[in-house]
Structures are given as structure tokens and as C-alpha cells.
Amino acid sequence: MSIDFLYLNEKDMIEAGVMDASRCMATMRETMMLFGKHDFLLGGPKGDEHGLQMNFPQTSDIEGFPIDDGPDRRFMAMPAYIGGRFHIAGQKYYGSNSHNSSRGLPRSILMVTLSDVDTGAPVAVMSANLLSAMRTGAMPAMAATLLADPDAEVLSLIGPGVINKCALMCYMRVLPNIKKIKLRGSSLSSRTALEMKSFIEEKYPNVKEIEICASLREACSDADVVSEAMSVSKADMEEFHIEWFKKGATVFSMGSFLYRQFDDFLSTKMVVDNYGMYQKYLSNFMARGETDELGNKREWCIMGIHFVHLVDTGKTDRKNVLDLCDIVNGVKKGRESKDEIIMCSIGGMPLEDLSWGYECYERARMLGIGTRLNLWDEPYMK
Image 1 (cartoon, rainbow, N blue to C red):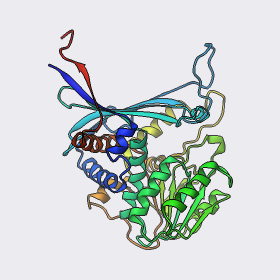
Image 2 (image 1 turned 120 degrees about the vertical axis):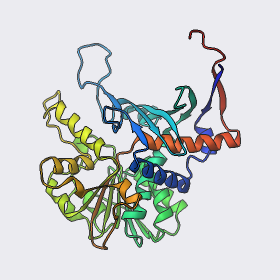
Image 3 (image 1 turned 90 degrees about the vertical axis):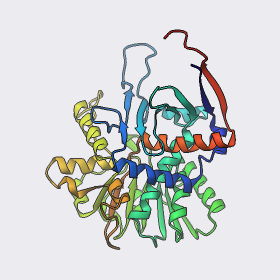
Image 4 (image 1 turned 180 degrees about the vertical axis):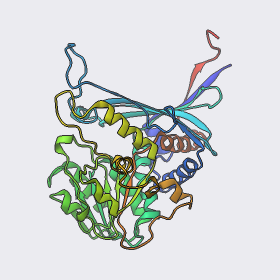
């Protein structure tokens, strides 16, 4: 039996609509609906893990062995199945190295494979940097329709890189009253912050004020919606504080959210995209020990882990950490008052890569985009 599959490079993906913010948000809503109905499967014994990550050691006696000499030095494989009209299996796979920027490359280089659920045969192989960034940015904006003040006027982008650029494209579709955008990069002269400022000025002339902030506190204060998507080393992280956020603020974290006074979250509404995923993160963290190979104290810096820790230590009940899928499906309420502070952890799942990848694949097929490749006409061995 002959097997062909469709290869889509980055140019093909753009032509297939990978940057379509509205379609991507609609697909993310549908994905979370299916997640809430358990019509999905992820890796691991409980079928809810983010993926399998390969980390490099910080030191090695082997000459030429790759070491962890910067943030995000890893390889990761993320298998998944999503049901509904998608009914597709596959995985996202990527390698990440912060030194890529010196080579003129993105920090991570990603691919997505879609596979037939019954045979395992490849259906499509696609460039996934834009796919992953867009689905990541679409998730908090989709959630903002349920959690944020619809009259929000001040948006803060903490970590003004690719992810928050995609998120901005989505936020601006669902928060029509945004008049001011605050940016927090590594410094006042941050290249990414300045590029984001120029992007906003060009694409969103209705935004009256753009402020590049000198501190994390400045970026958080007075913001109606805070969108965190930082990628920094532990040494460069700043610690957040609840008192920085105004009443009624909605805070989305997609990257690093260093916090030490965990009990402060008890005064907020806590929301997660996948509680079991953060449980596994915390379990893995504990298994690695209190210090790293160089004797430095380990600290977790993912918002969802903070919430799991509060449940595990008896500070709150599991029912008080809301699942985003239940809010999407109308089982639980999102924002209930103008004054409540809502903290939402968006860790991302390969389900989102598969659903958005499938959408782009179907459109590519319809438009005749991509390159048809042959796996075999007949397998050499059966």
C-alpha cells in the first residue's frame, strides 16, 4: 500500500493561514471544549503529561558533550491525540538553545507531525514555529473573553518576544478598548521591546500610549490585563507580588512566574489549563532534589505549580483551582465581579498544536499548498 504525506514549510504554513488570529482562537476554544469532555490523550501513565523532555547536564567529563549553559537548553517530544472533528494523532518535536540567537535562529526550532490514528502513517509534516507561537498566544486571549474585564483599557506585555506578539494580535481582537500598552523587556533599551513598540505603532494606531517599563512592578501596576511570556534564566528572574496588581486585573502566565509567598494566591481566583500537567511538573521538580548539580537552590517558577503546591500542602481545596475547560464548557463561572483578581496559568499542550496544525493542513489541502512526499509505494519489509 502506497503512503504519501504532505510537507508544509513555513511559507506554506503562512499561506495556509497559520497567523489567522480569529480562526486560531476559535480552534483553541474548541480544543479546550474537547479537553473538558476528555476526548483527548496525552503521554504518560495518566494521559495528561506535557511531553518527554531531555535535559543536558550542567557539567560533563566527556569532551564535546552538550551541556546546559543557558536557559531552555533541551529537546522535547510531545505526543497527543485529539478527538472531535479533528480525530488526529501526532506530536510536536523541538530542540531549544538560547545561543541560537547568535546564529540568527529562533531559540527553538519546531516541527509537528500529524498521523493517522488507526495506522500510524504520517498525514502531514509541518514547520511549527509559527504554529506553536500562534496557538500559545491565542490561548490567553481566548481565555480573556471569559476571565478579563471586557472594558479593559491597559494591557501589559511582559516579555515582548514572539509569543506575546502573537498574543497581542489575539488580544486586540477580543479587547477592543485597549488604549495603552505597557512593555517590559530586559531593559529600557531592550531590542525586543523597541521592536514591539514599532509593531504596535504600525499595526494598532488606535493605541494611544505605549510605555516601555523600567521594572516588573511598573509593568504590572494599573494594568487591566497582564500577559507574561518571559524566557529568562533563573538568575535574571524578578519576583512578582500580588499587591502590584490592581483590583479586577487578569494575569496570564505562559512562561516564568517567580513567586515565593504562595499564600497570596488564596486571595485570587486561580485558573489552570491542565492541573494534572502541573502536578507532574511538581513531582519531577521534587524528584530532582533541592539543589542542582552546582549546589544552587532550585525554585519552581511556573504559576500552575504554585497552585498545586497550595492544594498539596492543605492551604486550599482542589475545587478552588478552576479548570479553564470547565469555564469554556459553562460548567464553572469565569469572572464574577469587577474587583476579583484572576490568575491564569497557560502551560500549553500538544493538543493545541495538533488541532491548529490540522486546521492549517486542511486549508493547505483545499488550496493545493505544500509538497506531496512519498514514504513508500510498498514497504520493503512487512
